[in-house]
Amino acid sequence: MTDYEKMSRKELMQLRANIDKAIATVGDRDKRNALKAAEDAARDHGFTLNDLMPLIGQVRGRRKATSSGEGGEPRYRNPENPEQTWSGRGRRPRWVHEAEAAGRPLEDLLAS
Picture (tube, rainbow, N blue to C red):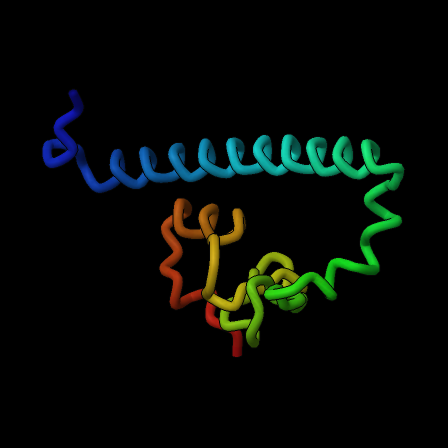
């Protein structure tokens, strides 16, 4: 078992970056699997996902997400690509994880 308290800050930050990348990879894989399952379910009912897209906003209890992610105004902006924003709610985008792994504090990513 690893004794994290004996690791340096640099080692811990690298470990965090590796874990964040692994989580993102697993999340991407899970999304692809979910998409395939949704496509299969739609096909079983005689539809494609494109046929069902107009109904997505009408599903009871759901709200449409904005371009900033999980709804709300963008609170953070990717300095490398200003079109990428995050409201600060929901799962952190990969670019936020990468910036933090590179040593940038979250405050550096605040949108003006």
